[in-house]
Structure formats: C-alpha cells, structure tokens
Amino acid sequence: MRVAKGKRAVLVIATLATLLFSVAQINAAKPQDDKAAATTAAAGQYVGSETCRGCHEDTFKNIQPTGHATSALKLREGGLAQSCEACHGPGAEHVNSGGDPSKIFRFKGASANKTSERCLACHTFSQEHGNFQRSYHAKANVGCTSCHSPHYSKERALLVRTQPGLCYSCHGETRADFSKPFSHPVNEGFMTCSDCHNVHGAFQGRQLRATAGQNAVCFKCHTDKQGPFVFEHVPVRTEGCSSCHQVHGSTNVRMLRVSQVNLLCLQCHTTIATRISSNRVQYPSGPVHNQNSRYVACTMCHPMIHGSNGNPEFLK
Image (cartoon, rainbow, N blue to C red; front, side, top):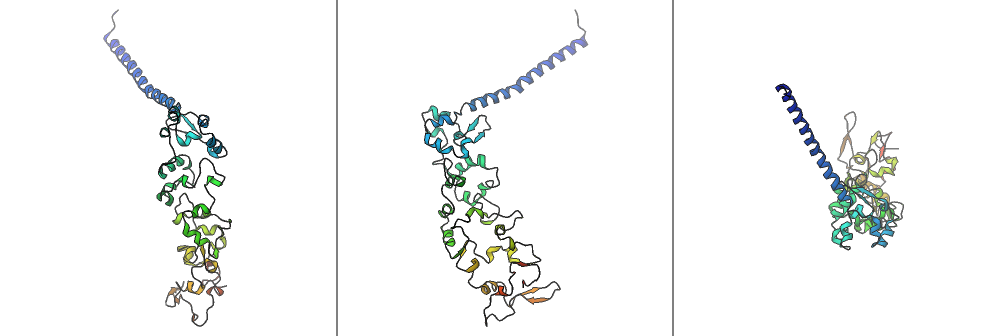
C-alpha cells in the first residue's frame, strides 16, 4: 500500500517528535534519580543517637535534660541528623572505623569560628544570636563553647558559669567597677550583664541593648527619665546617660563621673558659653551665680535635669 508524499512527511515528523519527547523525559528523570540516590546515600551515613550511646553513655545521659537531646537538623544533602549528629555530623564512618576521632567533627581542638558555625546552623534565626558573627566576641576569637556547655549545665542557657562570674573571667576591669561604693546591683544578683548587653552581638556601641523605640537601654528601668519632654536636656539625647554617669559603678553618689554636681555641670555650662532663645536673644548658658562664693548643687534649683515639661531652665 502506497502512502502519499504529504502523509509520509507528516508521519516522519510525528515519529521524530515522539522520539525527542521520550529523550527529554529520560534526561529530566535522570537528575531526579541521581538526587534520590544521593539522598539515600547521605541518609545512610546517620547512625542515630542510640548508637552513640553505646560508647558515650555518660555524655548521652548528661544531654538528656537539655534541648539538644531532641534537636534535629534536616541537612540539604538529605538525611535527618538527630541529637548527637545534628552537631557532630554523620557518624557512620566514625563507628565503622572503631571510633576514629578524625572521622567526625569534634568541638575540642576546633577553632572558635568552626564551633560557632556549627551552633549557628540552628541558632542563627533568632534576634538574640543573629548578629554573632559581627559581634566583638566573635572578632576576639570567642566561640559559643567558650561560654556554653552544649552537653550539660545546670545554669540557664547552658552557661559554663553563672553571670557575672563568667563575664568577669575576661572583663576584669568591669569587676572592679561593680565593687565600687555606688553601682548597679549586679554582684547582688538583681541584674546580669546580659540585661544591658547582648553578648551575641548588637547594632549599638558596646553591644548594648535598646528599647523598642531604639532608645538607650537605661530607659528600660529608668522610665521616668525617658520623656519625651517639652524641654530636653540635649546631652541625654545626643551623648546618652554615660556623659554624666559611670554606668557600671562609681565612687560618687548617683554614679556620677565627678564628686560634685557643680563641677559636672560646669564642664559644659561655662560662664562664657551662650545660648539663643526662641526669640533669638542670647543668654548666658553658664551659671549666673558666683560659684566661688558658695557651693550649692545646681540640682537644688534645677531638679528636672533630665528634661522638663514646664521650664526651659529645668527649674521646679
């Protein structure tokens, strides 16, 4: 039976299209098969925490009260890493080699950067830890395990020691400040260093925390000093509380930087300094009283020194 030339051409084109479609399906399915095979192979590298328990019984028991006992990490290459292997990596080669320590990731002996990378695989998605890699601690080669015990600790957040003792182990100069006559009640246990500082990193100087309105962390407790005020004391907004106060501790009352209030005020309010009022008239910014004849604290007459809603001179 003869086929017309036109019909023969259509038949050839249809056959070629069918072949091309089949080849495309095979090529599309192959990467998926390879990926599935890789996932299966990776999954086979995880032996489970019960296998780890066979040799590391004490560590296994210690980790049970912590959140790490139930931690799980879905790795990109496939396989569910649970508990021990979520941090130490796949354990099959380690087990098959009879416990060769080089066949698994060990935190002991690893650099601070490497250990922190392991921890941040899980702990990087919170506001508390998100800036750790840019923090002063990270730049000073202080890693997560420098302060935390991932296997076991009776302290909050798995700290190796309680605050402030843990912080004092590096910040000895701060320990001295908190031992001064007037200080924040850190040594007494009413405050901790992390109440004011985000030890994992922050955008403020000295890793200070801030209020929701991005104001100084001091206002979290000293709300009466926050304002807003109709008449603001400029240094409170521009330089912060530390322009007048030693925030950790001081030998002066109210943790002031100098012993006498007048001497503190006169550092800015000299007799030759001037200010311009709202009607463009110049007034002396310094004291109008003779400070040499009698010392009376400036705050006796200007008590609203942090800001006032009634008087531009912060008078009563």
